[in-house]
Amino acid sequence: MSGVPLFPPTDPRLAAQIGFVMEIDRLKGVVRRNLIADASRRENTAEHSWHLAMVAVTLSEHASTDVDVARVTRMLLIHDLVEIDAGDTFYYDSVAEVDQGEREQKGAERIFGLLPIEQGGELRALWEEFEARETPDARFAKAVDRFHPCLLNFHTEGGTWREYDLTLSEVLAKQGSTIEDGSPTLWAYTKELLAEAVERGYLRP
Image (tube, rainbow, N blue to C red; front, side, top):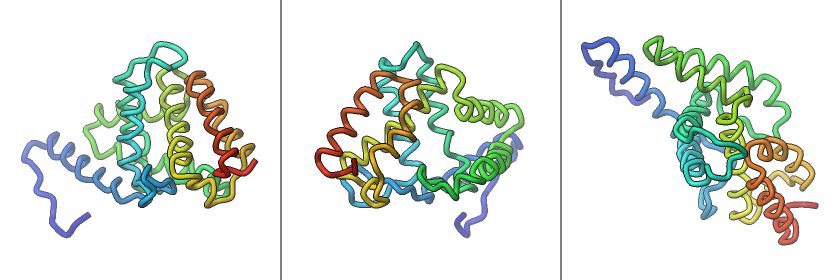
């Protein structure tokens, strides 16, 4: 937070909502491993969330079943708010994955808890739905979340694949079933993209 103290409205409900809005501005400072498409810098999590929401809006016709695009978009806009407290956990960091769930649950408790109870509960439930990946909306949202880094890594000539010396089998193991469950069309394209990445030397066989 900046040094400027928050000036809360007199209405306690609005004050809580403004406090939440100002707190989630911190997501802009959470830096991810992926590069943005022009490879000039790493993306932050707020940019990631916005881009995923737009990908979902644009590609929703390719979901494996009918989805509520508005709900999917809301999921993607809030799915990484917990990273304000938990930080970004790189997909291929097995050490950081050990306590990822615990860190993110604590973040969810605090961040969604800033809102009025029913509003915070609604967003928390949406976040839990995304994490559980048991509904069509959540499966498509998760598929988009896994598809997006593959797209960026290809268009940055390997990006984090090269940086961390990843292999095709490692990427397939992490991304495969999640993308396929949400969108067989995007999974078919992802496999073509990965094969081309290997051909171009962006990804190790």
